View 1 (cartoon, rainbow, N blue to C red):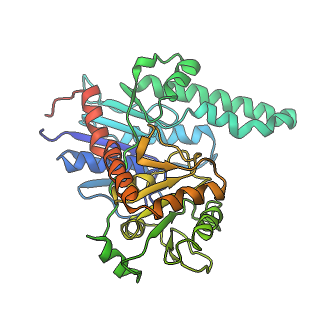
View 2: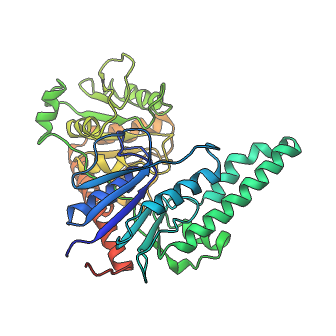
View 3: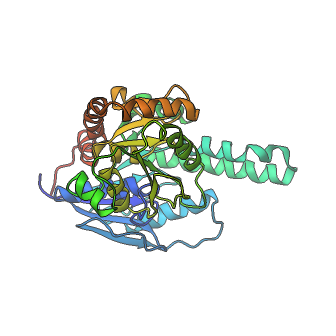
Length: 382
């Protein structure tokens, strides 16, 4: 396919941490650039972020911060980004949709086609966050009412401007129909784009890097939070403690956070993609226990690295993974330990689960989302 001009409107700089909300937008930009498109990412002025993808230009958009966190702030960023969209752009991708229209400055007689990814319904999120205010004074309630009205108006304007809408969760389409009368068939499903993690060429190479024996079972527990002791860390450590008497050679790697001293436990505290990729490359099994974000991109990182995934039932994916994940009966550490022990005791089951996981994870490759955009909006390259 010949090159096209693509501008991506992102919520932040290139991510340093795979859990950052801006990661999906940058993954899409990298996928467009990898196939030869001329790609720029528009993002808020400020934090430097991590290294950007090869072939992708980063354009900072200045926005005056008058009411940080208020709906009008998001809308002001959308309009500022819209003014910087190239008049000759073929395609504009908003990820996430956010609030307010872009109002792009189109070339005469046309405007870029706009694709928007709906990651949540902002009005519903606003209502959940403001529930406690219902019991405060009338001034707070009046301010909340005004802000809610703004959220509804600005989200509706953003939805109406988009030529194609994508959601990563099938439950979002009926919510958009209920709140904004968006026809359900206008919302297409595209699973979150998750890029590959960099990793060493082999498990032995990874274990040599972090000084782990090559012939013992290694469990990896990725930590989603980056402040203080993450609440998922304690149940992961407790699950490992319960199986270690049965498998004294087993090791646990805590990835993304320092780990308190425990027998058999080590940590890779850095939170960059290379560090998580190293941890998964060294492991046989990845352990995901709650609480975790609604969508955990490192589930896919573990699957692609050849790990079998053991998870609490509260850890979900947009599409049921079937045999690609071994779910415990409950979030209780005892049930989690039983599921983990079953995998540690059966290398054949680990290989079988890891094979299913690798096949499942292909659905989340960024290039698949790009192909879905092409199918929705076939735009001839110029």
